[in-house]
Length: 120
Image 1 (cartoon, helix red, strand yellow):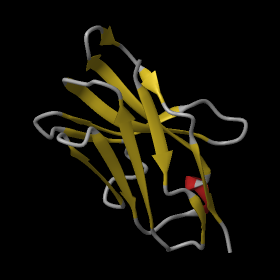
Image 2 (image 1 turned 90 degrees about the horizontal axis):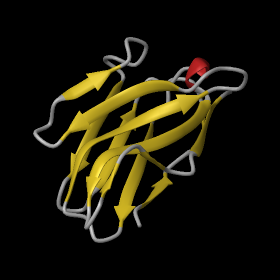
Image 3 (image 1 turned 90 degrees about the vertical axis):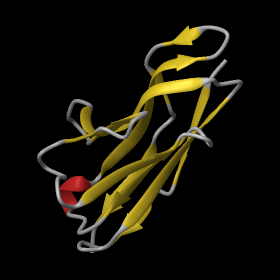
Image 4 (image 1 turned 180 degrees about the vertical axis):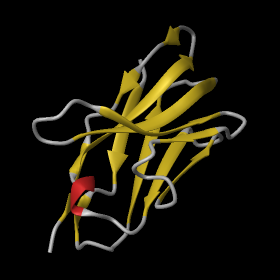
């Protein structure tokens, strides 16, 4: 079994910063890609950023230049540094891990989500 546990969400004023963390637990040999998605009220879940083992990053246009994704492969942990936050960044942020190799291969594992609220 593989579980993802997110932390770091909360309430922040516009222009502020938050750092999200997501740790994968279990007997894990490797995780091909880790990423963050978000879902705002009344909207579909959307990609925020992803990162592969070698460090290839992909960002949604709406967060480029403001958010930075990173990972610690030894800790099976992914981070999302969010700067210059805007009210439209308000959403539940979900961690995702794809192609997780244990004694089995898990595709598309999701965390429980952490709420980020940007408001004055």
